[in-house]
Length: 524
Image (cartoon, rainbow, N blue to C red; front, side, top):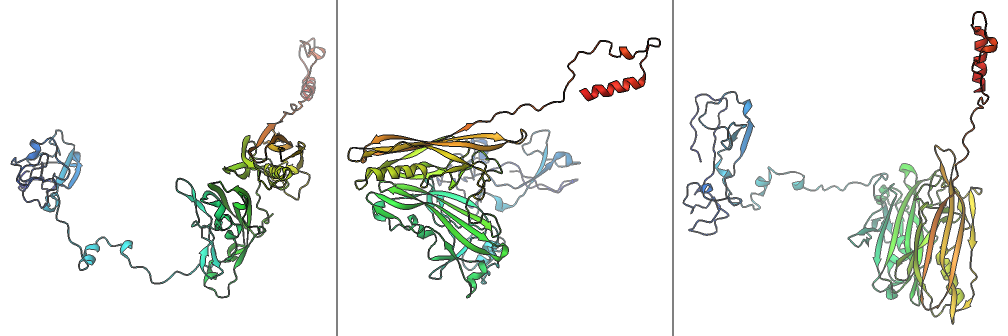
């Protein structure tokens, strides 16, 4: 290390420059000094190393064993004149590009003994770092807002008077397991899907709360505005539903298990929530299933909006858009999907997307062949069979003319379940569509559909796969080319103006040329 510098005769900057590193005996802590009385290899701060400059003999210095230096550098071209006898290059290379000044503060050497912090000196030590993390919490509790803002959780009150929020279960973890702690946020239409693990469905079919529709709307009311939480006279908004059935175990099947929950919240601006309704999709799940998938949606609609009692949205305006649900007279057209094991559910048919899916069915000892046939048919069509499809994506229930009837091709169901049963095992939804309207902005339109069932003989107690398939066929035909103006097809003479030509002057009167020109333009 260079000795302390004398004051130069002429300097633009008064500095104290130090270069190099060496072992110093007055270092408080040398963390790599592990062998007292002997020199530790590559420990450049070990006082037992006899060399005056260990950096000359060690290949490298261990981390924390070199002198901590604080540098302040500026470009050498900013230095007008340098009168010091020391190099201005950090590495001594020439020409120098940086002029660096290092601090000679002894406290920067290596490490210092940590300062003990206790209750007596905590205030003085933390003063320079004090901020929000050290601020005392406010003793006042913030009042509830007078109205909901976008993104606010919707407050609820249970029958016992406990304040809570409207829940929208969401997936957590790698296995997307359902967490019931996720709050629904005001004015944010969201849909979540997650998985419920079924450890013993035979025992928990009727006792597991998350499988029952009542868990999602009974014994709780929604606060009209957040300020109602502190009002003694506030009246909550009840959550209404038309579904009253509860899960029930029959044989090895648990009936009426919730697989989809859709909340519809009507609001009136800053005046708050006026009504909340919930719709469910329930499925029959085999007790051998290990899990089920559930979907949760929250939709917000203003009070004056059209079709406020419907949870169905447009699939295009007017023509269908690719990937959006196909609409029928009973709602969205759906196809059969599997939840794992013998569990079946349904998913929307997306316009223009050809798909195949299905699940399995197995008859019980209590079922007759007719019962099994009816259950298989109900699974394939999704409960009530649709009678027609909406031609356009914005068709509403009030518009009757914009629908195309579905042509059903069934197979006769006969047989005795004692031996075998003729069961509908597949449904093929054939949807015909075409582009209509202007070439510059065509609109997709459904022009026809046919539902074709396939049946086969099965043993009632055997596991039988059911399959639904949907295919879209484009029938678009380009229209005729637009009619053009009539053209002159007769061959004109080479000397077109011959009859009107002046033989003497060989000129054509201007009036005649103008008339002929107008005649040609009218013909073309």
